[in-house]
Image (cartoon, one colour):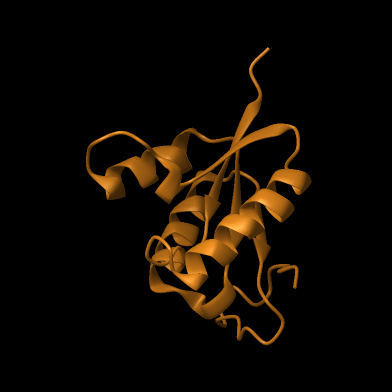
Length: 112
């Protein structure tokens, strides 16, 4: 039986940057543990050629759940979060303590 799929929306940073290392560790040690019954993938882990924006939109449309890291309120994350909410699929949102959550998202539960 195939596992369900979970797409991770997160700030990524450049390869080798402190941000990338931190986010990769967060995916490995937090998201994969929380979503243990899912196959987990983030945009920078897509290993096929093509238009990254289209690939992200396809992942959001095709995955069973979304895990969104709102830390820093990255514009790309917010765009992808909006697309995710349009699907009606479960979206789990996290943010580091101190992240100011935008007004439109603030009524929703964000785990810190």
